[in-house]
Length: 256
Image 1 (tube, one colour):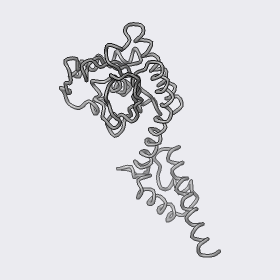
Image 2 (cartoon, one colour):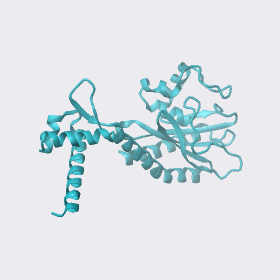
Image 3 (cartoon, one colour):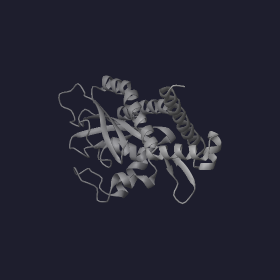
Image 4 (cartoon, helix red, strand yellow):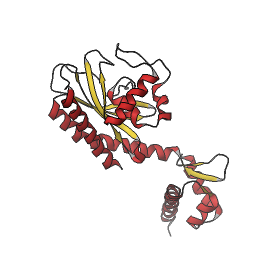
């Protein structure tokens, strides 16, 4: 075999071993080097080199206090980013339909690195509308989309998004205490969608629902925002909330 062909074959073999290890760890969870070596059917030295290469790129990591290895943060981050990219693509038809049906601005935000951030906005047809921008962070305690995401998180993980009390007050309607937010999130969990009425900006209202990804965890949410005078009331508001929630459920089903 020519030198270049030999080098290519070695590289492909190493890549194949690396992918096999990742598949094995994904299926079996934390595993010892001996288990990995046996699964690969290679020498101890080869198994060590493959694992070391995966560790060096963050695709595998050593489990502290044990002799085992598990999937690393680089791979988990890659999976998360792929899921978020899919959310944007899958949400576009829902956002377009909600804008068509309401004439209002429709927002998509995702949960990423401990923050909820707007990643897509379909502007409404009215001259007077809300002014959120792509890239803006969402105050979780004061927005419909933030509350929807919080309500879908385990209680123990909400504090990381909320931060310390009192929460930032934007208007007289802003909920600034954990007890207030907890009560609101309980209501959101029951009805399946969240609302805010002048809690970030006087005269602005939103209705939102969470998008659940793998393992039933929230990856983001969609909201319809409007000036309060145009936001539906009573049964019409409930129907809009249910429509947003149904679209989010469809998106989540395509993610899982």
